Length: 347
Image (cartoon, rainbow, N blue to C red):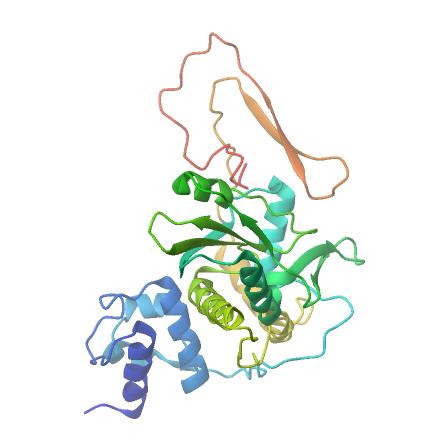
């Protein structure tokens, strides 16, 4: 006999995992759950049962029978996520802020590119595909958002480009599909000057098929974006091929609305009653007394590396190294894989 809470949790498990039924003792991770699905489940539990769980609780209690008694009723009201008036300066979300900071610190690179490959039937008309790409970027503001220095001490801001913005589309001639896809995926976005979304079309190795590579920076999309992007582009292309605009449902919110909602939810750090202050206090306590940070071992004895601000930017840095003597012996063991590499912010 299931309790009402267990019944709801079973339905939520099944919905997130894409299965028809979940029992009280079925393990969430044993049924194919992973961290991204876990966070989706946590969000659904919060919105459906008005209860709070975290990833550690779900990991330690992965079945409905174990999880149900561990749900904590939320004592903090959450604002409703809805479209909101846009301020003159639209801030970045914390997730965008992190990626923007890394882009400034390390310099533009392809490290945070997310390529999505799909196939369209038949030979594709580039002009029609461009219209379809514009339809998709019109529907999703994040695909036509650039990130500019703001007036407040250089803090960045979002700038949503007009709906008339057409994502770049490159048409690649015959030859070497795999190599061409790899080269396209290495494109480096300038986040302050170009939309973080573009496309390439290639003749496919399969007959009567065209391969399309959609490339976006992680500041605009994540792993969940592949399915809706492919669905929306396919819908738009089919409609444009027949001479009419696609009929999309109107999205109730855009990512910029989520950004404003999240800032309202977290509150200000200066407010001791805010969620942001509460979380910061938790981490100050949790990290109190940890050992002092250690320096990275040099890759070569005598080789010293330093990171200094680059000219013209308060954030961007350059990395300089002083090589050790050529006769230095090889280290007895290699340094940690994360240490003293350009792709790591730790050094």
